[in-house]
Length: 268
Image (cartoon, rainbow, N blue to C red):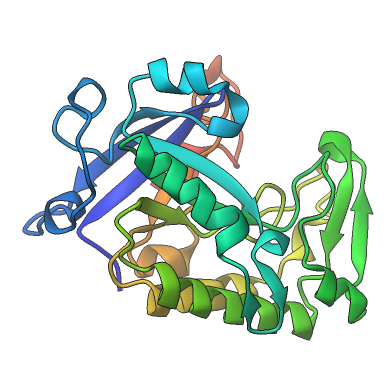
C-alpha cells in the first residue's frame, strides 16, 4: 500500500524536478527511512525533492557539479531478466545504485521495454518463445511488444514480485517509476490522431501492474506517468516527462487545448 506522500516528478529538458506534497496527518517517507547523506545545497531539508538528471546524459564532472540529491535511470527489462523467474540484478542495476550512492544521492529507477529510436529492451527469452511486435515509425521508430501476450504478462508479474522482494526499502532508492508499458515506459502508444494504436496496451494489464507493484512495494514510493484510476486509488505518485512543454494547456499554453497534457489529466 502507498504512502506517506505524493511524489511528482517533472522532466525539464533532460532535468527532473521533484515536488513532494505532504498528505495530512502522515509522516514524510524521507523522515521514516534512512536515505543516507543530505545535500543541503539541493533539497533544503528534503532529499526527495529538487532538480535532478540522468548520469547517462552527462559526463561525470557535470553530474558532480550539479547540486542534486537524486539521479534518474532508464533500465531495460532485458538487462535484469534473463528467463522466467531468473534475474541478474548485479550487472546493470547494482552498479548504478552503488554509483549513485557513492555521490550521496538516491536513485529513481524506471524499467522499460520499448524506447522509440532504440533497440528493443524485451528479454530475449520472450522473443524466442514467439512474442510478436507491432512496428511504428514515429519518434524515430521502434517495435512495440504484444502486451496481450500471456508469456509477457507472466514475465512482468514475476519481475515486479522479484523486484519488490529484492529492493523494497533499499535506502539507495528514492522511489521507483512503474514504467514497463508503452513508449518510454509512459503507458501510451500514441502515434497519430487516428487512435489506431491506442489500444496496444490493455487496460487490464495496467490495473494488474498497479496491483503487483502495490503488493510488492510497501516502503519505497511508486510513481506512474499519468493518473490512471487504479494507480490513484493505490496512492501512487506521478511523474511528468514533458514538464513545461506538455504540462499546462489552454490559456497557459497560448490558447492550445490538448486532452493529453499532464495537468489537465490530473485535474480531470
